[in-house]
Amino acid sequence: MSTVSKSSLIQAYRILLYRRALHPEFFDIQGRKSVAHNDYELEAWVLPGGHLLRYQCNGLCLTELITPSSEGLPERGLLTSLPCAGERDHEQDFPEKVNYITTVQIETLTDHLFDASYREMLDFADEVDALQHTWIDEDGVKNLSMLDVQRFKREIHIQSYHLVGGYGLILRSQTIFEQTD
Image 1 (cartoon, helix red, strand yellow):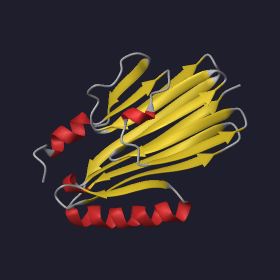
Image 2 (tube, rainbow, N blue to C red):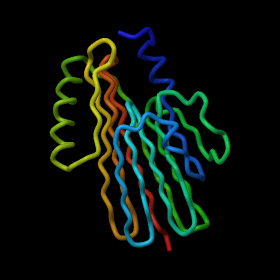
Image 3 (cartoon, one colour):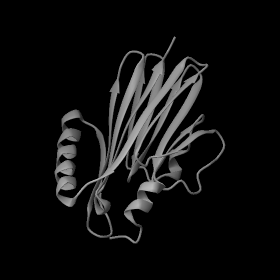
Image 4 (cartoon, one colour):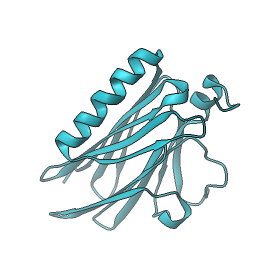
């Protein structure tokens, strides 16, 4: 197992919200999904252990990033930076008649429960045609990052699941971007 402790990894995970686009070429992008529906657009990128979401509507551009390392990330346009440890909820309204809502939860499981959750999430990802990335870490342990995107007329929901096997860690989030006009 890596020299990073379980509690250090949990404390390092952050959810960041920017009022601007971030350049995806600065990240280890492993998959992309784009949705254009009515008045909004969403681009979702899956990363090893994290994701980027870029939402555009009514002239507003928001980017959500969940990452295990926020070192070297830009400060310009950063609205919110929250630790993912435990459970977090955040809601923010914008004058462009857009509401951002997110909830994030992180937990650690025993090897047996983690393995069962990993298999269940792979089945779920296939069932809903989710954006997913699996990889084996340097210790030979399986990992998964997955984004399930559900579009609606005036809002879009994104469920993320990041499973880091060497630590038995599962990070879940649900983000909603909604038009309020």
